[in-house]
Image (cartoon, rainbow over all chains, first blue to last red; front, side, top):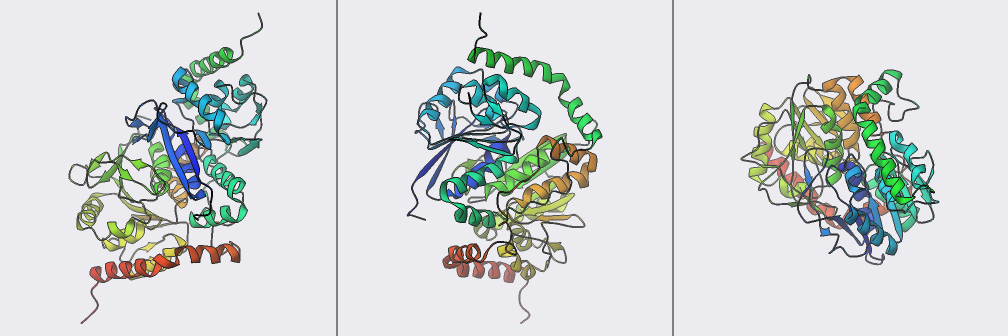
Length: 234
Length: 234
């Protein structure tokens, strides 16, 4: 694979990231061939993810080399991250020189808060999808959305479909099919409950109840981030 | 979720693990509720995974508490790991007290080398599946196989189906469906190339060519591990 052009992929890493938002596409993208994967955070200290273990940054906002692909994962920590000027600043700088500006799950809200989705078609985790428009994005209900050099994936596990789609866009369909076979990506979910349109009513009710106490505060923070980006006309 | 019984999940961590073998099921199992996830390695030093970044152990073979669920991921590093007496020793000790003894991808070969699959139905990455029988396991071509308290998943991405299946077995179907909805597990692979039965001929030829130079040496090491487990009658 030494005849393949080198590709540097940088994932933003922040506390309380949903780790599969990052590790799923990282597995696919690491098979682009001739690829470097960076996990970029404020410092080199381990960053606690949502699942009970830490991920280790490979570079900081100051030391990271400019990536060819920027990817912002999501998770509960996205609200803090989108209020942090250093984080938004690095995302903007990295995006400026990148061939691909991408996200998985609620990472698209952070891209939005950085002003990087205005006028772009984009997707997000289904439960937060309605927030995209506040950042000037054009919300599209699809598992993977590509609009010019913006590629966004839906919630969590959608990062795997997103990653494989990006592999095909960059290295071609034959390469992507080889990666799919190597990673045995032949999904067989034991239930059909992965989208609100198909989940049963009891599951939906439980899901809504689960997030209810935190939802209002989170929504207010997302609205505030959008207002900072696009001040209401006075 | 405080009325749920506590569950400790331990993943074996070793150099050159296929990180999604671990991080995929870890995401699902972290949503069991009242769960602790341990990544257990020889030392607490960062462990380089296959995808270009390190994972950080939470415990060592000496300090790890006995898990309720033991999970062994796979990857190219499995060959070294299955030749390491400390690793096999910890896997055997952890398995002895666990409710569930599990693996993803070629992790089942390591379980086999530890003598933990004799007489059990099991699966493995499709390209290494034929090695299971050498360890006394009963090979089953399925994405997830459960036989008594052994649960094994197929290659890499099968760990997500494996994880969700285990969530259902432990916490019930309603809980699993809620986790599936929260993680938007509604896969939509862009191609149908994730299994050798459906990949096109060109992809299969490229896959076989890719691994060919290393295959003979790897196969010999797996056979040697099986021979140590079950000496041929003299």
